[in-house]
Image (cartoon, rainbow, N blue to C red; front, side, top):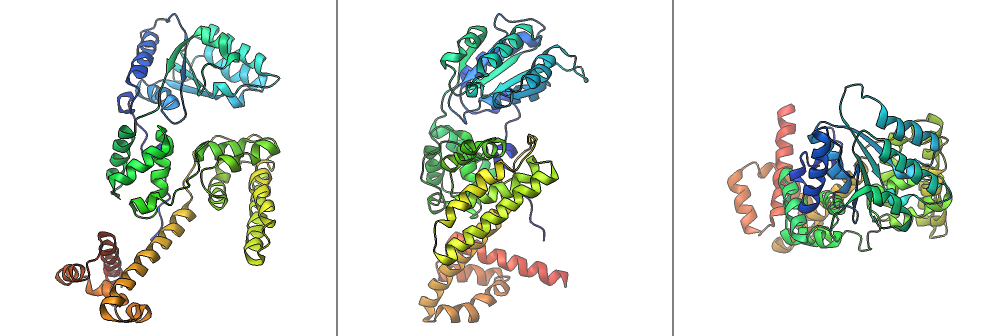
Length: 419
């Protein structure tokens, strides 16, 4: 049986309509009121809007969902990509004047506005100001900090809409809904812990939920396996920052921002690198760096010479980022399949060992005998539903243990039918 490639849940469970976006009702209404003026063929007093607030609360999502809901052609520009003046002229200003091939109204989205800085910042900002003034289409700016001093001219031309952190309860409800769609058992207290950890960041909470889901259920035990350190940047932002990094400092800073350990970072890079690097030589060089990193990690563990881990860190960050000769393409990321499989196998072993400990004590057997003389026969015996129910009751098996044995039984049935 082939393993289904796991889609990132922030994409899979993305709202399709603005009313389905959680929280920030006042902000959504203000945005819709402004956009409706454009949709009626009129031009509002403020031709652009600036959505600002902390990460993960739905700023970019609001603009993307509006484009989908109202059948608008979304032209998305990342502020970190517009230092190339040629790119600004061809993509930003040209887009606002051209007629769409499919004759759709456009929605121009400029993300991460507050990331614009450096020697070219003033010129880039002046180009964006020209974009607002010349555009015949609505322009939406996104920023975490909408009040940075260098943005004052853009603020004067924009309708300022603040979006706030989401409440713990609203995040818990949304996570519970995802669990139901995924047929995933969950403990509400565990969802509450995830929500509180996210500090109002829905995207972060959903990613944590998906990470925990690889264990087959969402319980307090699974949630406690999450990294305890503060989340400076979520997984998406960290990986994108690494892939688009053009210097050593920017690439290595990802180590401080990625919310899990470096081994997990390696798996995310390995799974997604080929989606962004389209040049075969760049891709080969980057994977060569990952291969060497893996060798240093193995040597460090084998020889207990931990300085090798410094080389490992450099290779998976700067080594990968500086392997490219051209700008990476835009792509959707995928959850690391290796992580899902390995973590699932680890959890299976934990469940099995817990069962063996319980049954060996009840029958005064060693775990080895319990495994060889009882465990391997149970999947076949569990095909008898009456026996299965009595066995579960007699040994007071947890729901997780019971489900595990029933699943094994189901697999045996499938194999017998195919012979």
